[in-house]
Length: 379
Ligand SMILES: Nc1ncnc2c1ncn2[C@@H]1O[C@H](COP(=O)(O)OP(=O)(O)OP(=O)(O)O)[C@@H](O)[C@H]1O
Ligand SMILES: [Mg+2]
View 1 (cartoon, protein in one colour):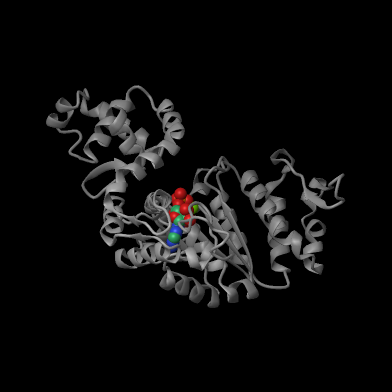
View 2 (view 1 turned 90 degrees about the horizontal axis):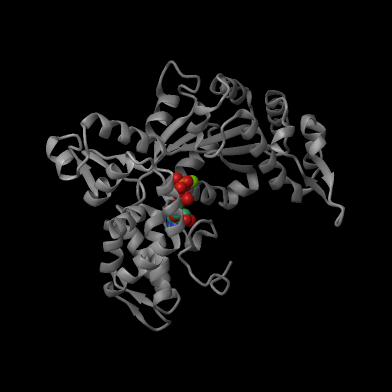
């Protein structure tokens, strides 16, 4: 895709091409090395740092595209093996349908349990994957068939499973062990597991009592390098006939601790605020922040609606502090009218489980920097 078709080069939420993707050269080479050596990889990183982007960037490398069939599913919102199987089946079908090779035509022949979902579109006569979650009656059979199918492919396959720790929460008890067995039996299908729950991911892959113990090389994803990101953003401004001060990019980097999504959201907005030929200086930062937060406001209201009356004061106190330390000290409780330390502890537990807050080295902060800012403005 060339510059003419992308009006704002600070792309958020999808992968376009390497032109709009910053760095990750070493990480991409690392993934390639693992794949070349037939190893599965587990990537662990906090939310919004760029796990999904990295995997998409890796899949877009020309030699990977040529040599492998690649599939990507995000299982964050799934709660059962049936949902997992549904997503995987759908993704494989979506990726392969346009190829129309001998192998791809065998999809419903091999994955027999999904055949009832195979229909022809009345208007175009094209096959469609029209299967509801309810039609996956025997997920174990379907998953067997899916793996048999992948193993019979004309090229090796790479399956990336994002937010993989979610399988530990599935309704069925033995999913980890079941998947581990299937994955181990694969000869030409490789896996990339990624997840943001450090503790859970680490337990799954590094604890001897767990089925996935030592079944993947685990790696951390770090924030992009500050200088590299600053050069990246400056270059793109320049390519579009605009300029931005390095000082401003660095300030944005520091404010969001290098977490990619937040930086990209702000820089994307700053890019809009200046015309071609103009310079973007630090004075535009507050406007950009306000505009970005406005676009997220309805989701913040939803989130707040789902937080209990007991959790709210605790949440507000953390937002106010930025990073809250010693939350159960008498001083903190008093200053913020928080009641007893045991009730604060219960609220923290609930907020952590909902992924609203996260632990830091010293205490707690809100996971979402923009949400924290919005709360500070409004409460
Ligand atoms: N190296 C990069 N250069 C430019 N933009 C990037 C880069 N990595 C990620 N992004 C962008 O930053 C945003 C967050 O990245 P991504 O969705 O990959 O993070 P994630 O860790 O998968 O987040 P989540 O935990 O929400 O799934 C996306 O909009 C993505 O397009
Ligand atoms: Mg992701």
